[in-house]
Image 1 (cartoon, rainbow, N blue to C red):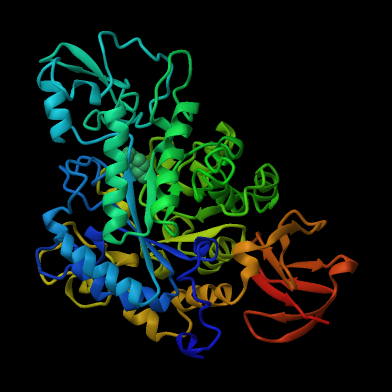
Image 2: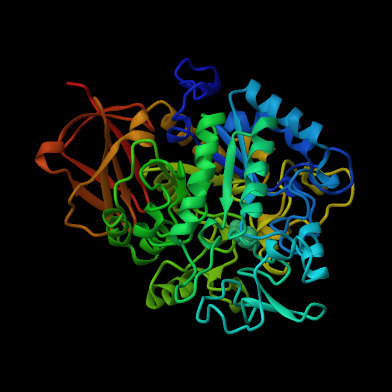
Amino acid sequence: MDWAASPLFIYNTMNNQLWYKDAVFYQISVRAFKDSNGDGHGDLRGLTEKIDYIKNLGVDCIWIMPIYPSPLRDDGYDIADYYNVSDEYGKLDDLKGLIAAAHERGIRIIMDLVLNHTSDAHPWFQASRSDKNSPYRDYYVWSDTDKKYEGVRIIFGDIEKSNWAWDEKTQQYYWHRFFSSQPDLNFDNPAVQDEMLNVVRFWLTLGIDGFRVDAPTYLFERDGTNCESLPETHAYLKRIRHLIDGEFPEAIMLAESNQWPKELSQYFSSGDEFHMAFHFPLMPRIFLSIAQNNATPIIEILQDTPSIPDNCQWAIFLRNHDELSLEMVTDEERKLMWREFAPEPHMIHNLGIRRRLAPILNNDRSKIELVNSLLFTLPGSPIIYYGDEIGMGDNLNLPDRNGVRTPMQWNSSPNAGFTKGEPFTELIQGQYGFQHINTESQLANPDSLYRAIRRMIHIRKEHHAFGRGSIQFIESNDPGVLAYLREHGEEKILLVHNLTDSSRSFTLPAEYQGGYINLLTNEMQNIQSITLNPYSYHWMKKHAH
Ligand code: NOJ
């Protein structure tokens, strides 16, 4: 079946203020996606050339990682100019071209907005550190002592030993929550607050559809607190939302805040702060459930998750460009996950696991599909990390998190069809090499992972229950079986997952028994019980009568 041609293919998510509640997102490193000019670096024109690939997968919104001018000490999360695009990615006009090509196809584009810190190469910091009397001194957080805000956790603990860095010239310390090359902006300074509102307005005026807001948790610092999620921080984030609502009502803000559900849901406030937030605690529990053959971690964390305002939405994900973060699990669970998914020490980074989805799951096709089935059916909007739809691998020889940011594998021609030049980093070899894993062969093969994922996406897009519906867990006497009902209006979809490596049989409670359409096979079935193959997933739509 040609999904793209099917009349059911898309309900239009353009011209719809709550579009993000139904949307499928796709995260892209522009550097790694497609090079158009042979310089070995992916660029905006290259990404534009591939827009139909993204469209065909069923994506509604692309998140592009930072493309700003940057010394790249943190892959662009260290910004040196908030109003431009780095030369290696192209010009602002190329971004406009990408936005136009995407919008023509009903695809939106959000980008990273890094509020908390700049690069130390940013002219504001250069001026700030040049002289204690510079008008920019107060753009950053300076102190005579490195004992202030003691006890605040160090996020990049593998590299940084303090949140303060000494500045030789002006003989004071400056505050940084991430690398010392990323000084924190001082949000107590009204000028900083206004600068960042201007940045927001600039990109939205250009046509960007919103922001993945990087590290919004740390904007303000206060003595005697952990300096996270402070009331002042929420108040400022609401100012950004206010601007957006007034001037760009369809744009969104997505919060990257690695917190427990209760703190996390504060980022939605009463529907007047963020539109979306990553559900960080759910993500590791999807993997934990597989490791333990037990649905409890997923069920418990979702039961612990407060309900959110109607105009808000969770963003759910399996992997991204960072390490698989294990901050939101207990020490014991973390150890178990390291044992299971990061058996070699160099696979661990900070607290997490710096591997891609397919290698984490031992390239086990049924497990990969199973976790994707959870991604597409649990409450929230799914975000796919580029390349995971074809099961790309990683390169652990690269430092930091770079091993999961390697070139997209388009075909088996030299350099994976990524560039005609010398790629910015070596391509993956061996089992996950582009000769074996690439989009061209997977598009052509009806049994490929890509085709399975595309199919799930397209079925999802035909049903509002996934993006908007309630969830009800269905009691099973087998902890290895995760069953839930997603319900929206008349639409009822039963999802059943076998989280174990053995066959199971699941008997539906009487009130759920009856006629269903198997959405994955299109068969009509009268169901009292289901036989579940190892790691199998079942999407069953309740027959109307
Ligand atoms: C979170 C981003 O995902 C990560 O890549 C980055 O290093 C930090 N924020 C600092 O900006």
